[in-house]
Image (cartoon, rainbow, N blue to C red; front, side):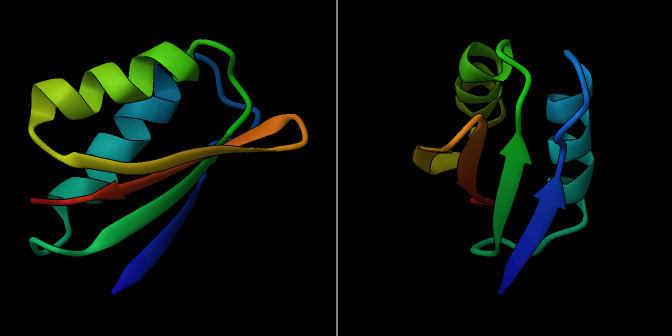
Length: 73
């Protein structure tokens, strides 16, 4: 199952905090597609994923917004 999370307009650390909260409610294997436009998210999201032990499946840009695809392990 895939879930969407819109973190655009939020500044550090809110995108990562919202991602963490969403992941806590998911079952292993479920995926979150997060949209963020905070420049700090480029560093914060990969770091969070590595520390939390979740999979950062994909990172891509769509204009001024970054898309992060994260799978709960």
